[in-house]
Length: 269
Length: 310
Ligand SMILES: Cc1cc2nc3c(=O)[nH]c(=O)nc-3n(C[C@H](O)[C@H](O)[C@H](O)COP(=O)(O)OP(=O)(O)OC[C@H]3O[C@@H](n4cnc5c(N)ncnc54)[C@H](O)[C@@H]3O)c2cc1C
Ligand SMILES: Cc1cc2nc3c(=O)[nH]c(=O)nc-3n(C[C@H](O)[C@H](O)[C@H](O)COP(=O)(O)O)c2cc1C
Ligand code: FES
Image 1 (cartoon, protein in one colour):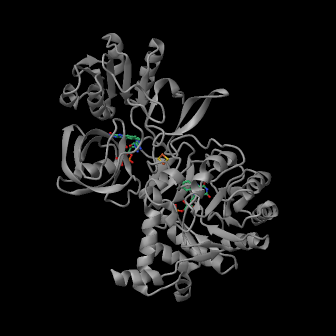
Image 2 (cartoon, each protein chain N blue to C red):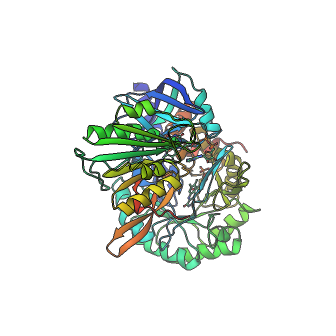
Image 3 (tube, rainbow over the protein chains, first blue to last red):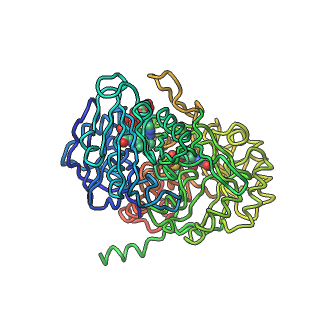
């Protein structure tokens, strides 16, 4: 059964401007797939709805999340202290298709393959666990990560990636531009690309991969009500092959996603 | 422990709702429950009944995103009744629900009287226990709320649906009216077997940084704890206007909230937004209601009704 549990906050530290890293310990967390997220339920009950946050890394009985202060809820979160308790769901969503799943997915064995994990801004956190899992499956992992100005999680990525390429929009360090421009210009080639970040970036990467005729998996974001598939709040448009040919269907980001294959996503609007 | 079990045995939460026996008065509010997904968090057979997301005769795609906004004390939604259509519901959702043994109340959406009727007729051939006709959704342009705000139209839908339905028909009312009792009397007069209220209030939120509405649809349905006083008042008014049983809902977050609706005159209650805030809310509220009954010395739901001093 999925659950909402009380976890212990082990740490909650700033790692860049307005970006925090929180580790939550709970023996009830269960297995975690890269690309899954958790719902964080806030103490201030005037904020009724949970805040979905991607899982950045996971151990036997703890998860790490990395979040940016975007509004009232994440600001409250940043004030939580180590040793305090927090209400958190067990992992939600499907995560990246890097093992055979009921919904399809890729091969389980990545040996001999090179993959790129491409994160943009607050889309970088889930790349850490993803890089780790891909490496465990034998892949040669390269990271191409973009930030506005201040990079974070670089050391964490270096643990699992042969190369970590950094881009900044303002050119404060690394490549001057975004992560997809960097992938193109520096020819960071791979057999498959994985991504999470702003929609424009995901679309650019998806177009690039479609042109190269290789797969890319992207993690989408949508405003969520429940985060577990009850409210039909978080839909996106996905191209699906049916007996009648190609059809555009509405899929729940929280339930069918948040990860989809780039070529399936209807990007316009 | 023994003592507790003894007391538990003495509690009887069952209610007869329009001839359908519910083992307790807790149901799920339409649009906030999904058989498989909610069932991943708790055993749905513990509930008195489940009320499913609105279904129309054909699939509807709903409104563009963002469809959800949080507001103080509640939320706005502009899902716009996205649904896979009645055939998909019968094929995919109903068999799963049936094997849980929980009575199913199917919520019905429509843009025209004919559309409501065709869904009601089709559902009559299935194992649903009852139907809840949504004439109150603020998120669809035609039909929906238009039927719920005019007593004549509300009566017309009720009459037509009653003619084709072989299951009890519950009419779900909108709070966006001046005189709720008038609408309730109108649908009762045409044979409604039950009434549920309230659906969402029409609301809006503006992002003052971006200077734009938060919802793509601009306006949406307002639900959650902030709407509870409106809902309790309306259940109270409707209880005094009609004889048929009532499902009360709107902002129920705790067992005591459920008891409050029962005192106001509800025979059963639905848990909506609370289930988005906490996936196990329906069963938690059931547990809390039992706890409240034990504390107050109530043995039946009827005793809660009777205890209320108006
Ligand atoms: C599957 C998923 C995974 C996510 N993972 C992360 C993550 O790992 N780290 C991280 O920092 N953020 C992540 N987000 C975004 C995060 O959920 C929002 O930033 C957060 O909910 C904002 O809450 P708030 O109360 O601070 O902001 P609010 O005061 O509610 O809103 C402030 C602003 O935040 C944005 N926002 C609010 N809710 C959402 C939402 N559900 N999705 C996107 N933007 C939103 C809006 O632009 C809004 O204007 C993720 C979102 C999704 C859907
Ligand atoms: C996301 C969402 C979707 C809803 N969809 C429906 C629906 O399909 N049919 C319906 O009759 N009511 C629908 N409602 C209204 C609820 O069933 C309920 O009447 C309302 O939310 C008030 O109860 P609450 O405050 O407990 O949520 C929806 C509400 C929400 C929040
Ligand atoms: S957030 Fe409720 S269905 Fe996805």
